[in-house]
Image 1 (cartoon, rainbow, N blue to C red):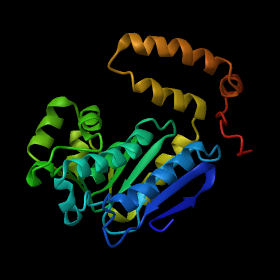
Image 2: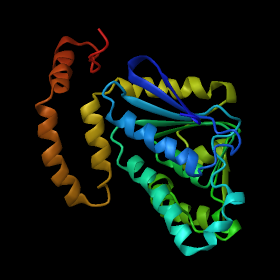
Image 3: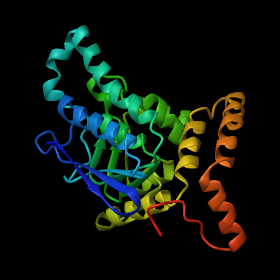
Length: 259
């Protein structure tokens, strides 16, 4: 791939590193296409347990490339662009594997949307997540009107989107947009620390938990899903390992690649 590098680490952790320098990792067709292929591959790869999404550039992603949007004044072209972006969004929304965002610099618009797809968000203290859509006459895209309220609640999401708010470092953490805020040179280390903890989880139970959370607004749907998911867990090798570890008073090992 031209704009993405996959770094494989211990415990099945894969860092997906974006590096489309010319576009500052703008979420245009070229980068989106590579992201779609990379995620489709990793989500089917049994050796991959956790995905870290990050950038080799100063910024995570500046969002959409406005300089290339002149043609989108044609409604058909605009719909085709959104249809293409939605293929990636749907893959990420349905992802069963834990994902960590490792963010430095700007993550704006659709770039912030990519961050919001992750289960854990680690920010540099100088990083900025922003939602500038109204400033250029646009509505939110990349499922942000879904993921942002899930993160910070509907009232705060409404204010962030209508007022085109930016959130930097500690402010992002305080509003719930970030799980960790650390110094710039500690972002990768903290993201890896988080990924190791996620990689140590029983992958089957983690996947079912992510699926269950998609029904969080519907109690009956959650109960129905529990009735399917928990028996699968009871029948799994991970549950047997968890029980054995509890009886032996030791830490469980849910990763078969680790002795």
